[in-house]
Each structure stands twice: as C-alpha cells, then as structure tokens.
Amino acid sequence: MLSKSKFILAQQCYKSFWLEFNNYKKTNVIDESAKDRLNAGNDVGEEAKNLFPNGIDIEYHKADYQKMCELTSKAIDSGKTTIYEASFLEKGVFIRVDIMNKTSKGWDVYEVKSSSNLRSYHKEDASLQWYVLQAVKGLKLNDAYVVTLNNKYQKDGDINPTALFTKHLLTDYVKSNQFEIENQLEDIKLVSISNNEPEIIIGPQCKKP
Image (cartoon, rainbow, N blue to C red):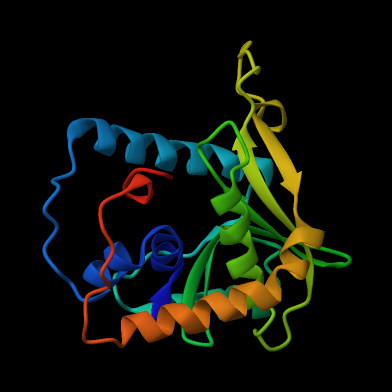
C-alpha cells in the first residue's frame, strides 16, 4: 500500500522512497527545529478547520487504515457535511484529506499547507487526492483546493480564518493531471517491489523540497 506522503517522497527521490518503503533505519535524526516545523504545521491544520467549523474529525488509528476508512464512510452516510482528516483507501493508495466540505454540487476538497506560497508538489498532492477520491463509489466531487497562509494577514483581536488563509482553486489542474498521476503511480509501484536499491547519487533532490 502507498500513502500520500510516500508518493510525494518518491517524486522527490526514488532512492529515499525505496529506503523508507523497505523500513531502513533513518540515519538523520529529527532535530528540534524540524520538530518545531511539524508542530507548527499541525497548529496551522487545526486553525484551518475554522474555515468550516463544527465538522467531524476522523480519529487517527495507527496502521488501522480500514478503521479510519470505515469511520469516514459512516460520517458520510450519516449526513455529515464537513469532515476533517477523511480517510480513503482506493487503488492501493491511502489518503487522509485535511478538510472535505459538501456543497449542493458535490464535495469540495481542501489540502492545508503551512507554507505562504503554492508550490508544485502541493499541486501534485492535490492531484493524487483527486485520483483516489474519484474511485470512491458514490462520492460526488466538486472542486479541489490547496490552502496556504496569507503572510500579509495582521491579527486584530480574534483570528479571522478567512483572512489568515488563501484558497487556491486547482480543479482544472488536478483533472488535467490524472493521466500523469496514474503513470507516476505505476513507476513508483515498480520501484517499491524492486529488490535493488535505486542507484541515485546525492544531489539537489536531497534538500528540495
């Protein structure tokens, strides 16, 4: 099974992906600054929920992907219109969607980033989500967004989530990118089942993104 994070890692470097997929011990220990960035990202994700308040949160169950998918399906079937961390497993790919909000036209999908800029791998992230969600039986999709921080926002009193965040509409892009996503997944799956570590030397891909 392939996760969204491993898909993004494979786009960056097949060797790094292969090592992680095969559970090789990491040689670079996460430092305090990296932990701080992760915590900041979690804080941003929590704040973004206020764009669509009063939704239902799908609890994380480590390694129990089916459980998270079942909780998501139950939330949809019960009529919930806003779901945080909605979980789906289709075509061998598992994703958790930061925010899903149902409209009269279908579900809008939001991927939240702690960056102040829309980056290319954010768009690939959203494209993979669309690829998986299209395969979910009975799920009608409407639009796809990536949400980033507005670095010009100045807090005055309570945080205004609409002003704090910028929504980037990417529906046309993710739809046009589906063929490429499918091809990439095929290549990544071939790497994952290979017994040989990819021969890739250290280079710019090690640090970017």
